[in-house]
Amino acid sequence: MISDKNETFFQAILRSNAPWIEDPAFLVKPQDYRREAYFKVEQELHAKHGMAVLIKGPRRVGKTEIQKQLIWDLIRVRNVEAKRVLYLSFDDVQILSERQSDRALLVQDTLDTWAHLLGAESFDRIQGPAYCFFDEVQAVDDWAHLIKNRVERNKNVRIVLSGSAAHSIFDKALRTLMGRVIDVRLTTFSFREFLERRGSLDEETSAALREAQGAFERTLDAASLHAALSAATAKLDGLAYRGHITEFLNTGGFPQLWQMGEKIIERAQFVDENYVKKVTLEDLMLLQQIKKPEMYQRLMRYLFARPGAEFAQNKVATTLGTTSVTLAEAMRLLGQTDLFIFVERFSQKAAPLKLRDIKVYPIDMMLTFAMTKIAPSLDAPTEKGAIAKSLAAQVMARFQTLSAIAFMKSENVQHPGEIDFYLRADLHDCPIEVKYQPEIRAEDTAMLRRIIAEKRLPGGILIGVDGWNVNGAVYSIPLWAWMLLA
Image 1 (cartoon, rainbow, N blue to C red):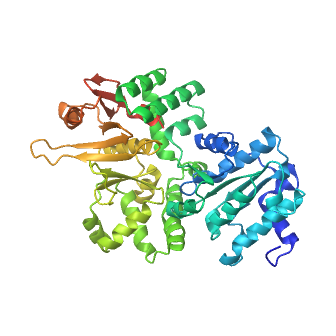
Image 2 (cartoon, rainbow, N blue to C red; image 1 turned 90 degrees about the vertical axis):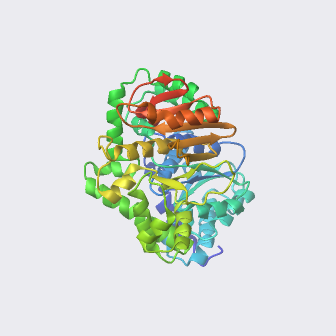
Image 3 (cartoon, one colour; image 1 turned 180 degrees about the vertical axis):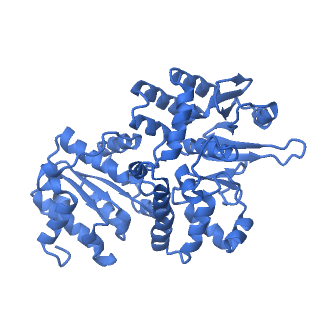
């Protein structure tokens, strides 16, 4: 033992975190529904590259649940001996009770104690396949070096880890783990996952939607997406799925909110506590050592309450009673929480995002609801445009291959206008306009057509209420169908 604890102490940690090691009957069955990220992690876990797998994303979106599902499937489906599968949460009270500088050594001794149960002298000497699942890794300083050493010294043990923190923490750690870890991003439930989980989408339709998504991500071709998506959703009742959007807005994509039923105020308070206060007080103040968490909380509330609003740095700084310099740093850090979608203003120059000419969308409308206490609705005459654009942006943010999501704004006095989204991936571009209104006028698509013509693009997308119209190079797609894309 490196630390001054005896083996009984470490056995207690093992029993509290992974009771099935002592008795497989203690293994608790997780949820049946497997998210798409689950299959990505599972694929990497069993690949031959020998690297660790990192599940990263905002807090309370289901990272621990995926680990529990993988553990269940290893033991119950793949028949791996239960004691060869370890789960260890780094924020276990017995670990947190130690000084921060001692926690890594304590974890290492716990792993060696587990190795003894497998008949090995230490973790590094474990033979045959074994699996480690580490949760809340940010609770231990220098966790990256701890994982790095374990990966390098024993390829027989496969490692999956996750944590809740601003992703700059993980980005810094990933430099330490370069070539030794593969990261899988997890965010809130998508509309498609929400419907799949409750049985409102059959497997054939889901497969067709995933195929359409993959093809669009590769090509950004509006015409091909229009054809593929309309075919995939041909047997679906558009009116019913518009109703499903309302249900999704009222429920949100955070799994823990689903257990609260119709307690609207309770859900709002839960989101405020866990995605505003805890993000600022724990993820940012403790890990990033920020000095004014109250200002960060005010900024988060300001942004969540104004989805899709153009960010005017000087104006916001005055409103919040801070300086532009402080606000710029705050925006940089908030951008790393994975709770926001930053849409920059389009530029031909390959310049870094300055967080000034941007629009900000929440990753889930429950975040806006928690700030405004007004239930989001596409029937609201004043808010429906912002809500529709937010829902459209949330789909785009799930695409894996995009190099940029931007908006366009014309400075031409004779031809004013704006494009909500301009997608770019590799050598492909696609402009997208969102008009959630019953009637589309010629002027509503004028800027979209002008951009298509000026940039000689094959087409653009108009996301609306309903209808699958094709008008020249403009391809209309209903919002409910677009939301099924990712």
